[in-house]
Length: 332
Image 1: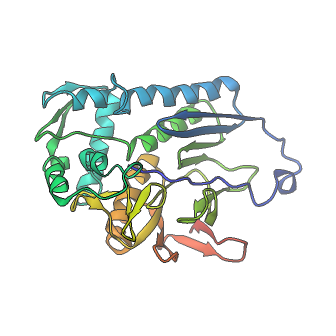
Image 2 (image 1 turned 30 degrees about the vertical axis):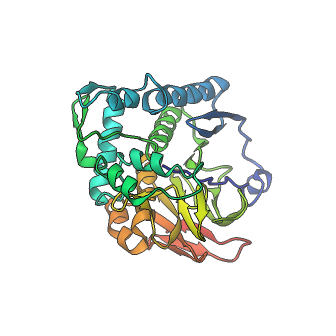
């Protein structure tokens, strides 16, 4: 359903100037293309074996959750014809989490939006689909068409599901859990913009950049100071086409069947769970800043909003320091 690039920036000060008495930990890093994105895991400390284990986790979860992998749980559910389908506990748990966010957001986030996403196909389309086609696709969309009973999932009304809006977040959380269990104190997990940081780097929070909408890839507009948190960004500027002077992007409003028309160009959600932040970032972009307030509060999450005019706003739990080259945002 999304994802934008959340650029990891260099620390404000080199480690050598922060603490000359602290031993420098060895760095282990791997980058791999999977889940239709770039996955990078970087450890400060640990070992090559632990790093390989983290990448292996990503690969195993992709085989469970990707709708494009023919043998995945999601493919099996979508091919079931409405019959109850046995899935792994991880898949059942992730679907339940998606349904929870769908319910709390009033349907602004919906794991059954796949038929609409395929219809719009913004990466390859040059014009919007006709209203009749949108109306027809909407008939199968609705999170209430999904039920989970233990480890069995059932669809009705010809619904189909895609967990792309929360799966990367879930996997990032699982990788972080694994790294902590292996004693890793400092690390960065970046699954195509779903960023999780463990601890700090050389005694300072990690600095994570927020992409400037519609600018060159990697051009940051704002920065975040993060320690033991996740940041996930959704934006309308990564995948879109223009038609008759209007932008049609990939984040679909399930209520209308069309790309969201809120005034938000980008939302970055900061909280403890990358899975939750993943779903919330989509929901908040559809809802807009004002309507997102209660939803964010219900999860103890904070957010940075950038509107279509390029102006940014932050929720009450964040502070902004404008003394640097770019505004630095941090948790209070």
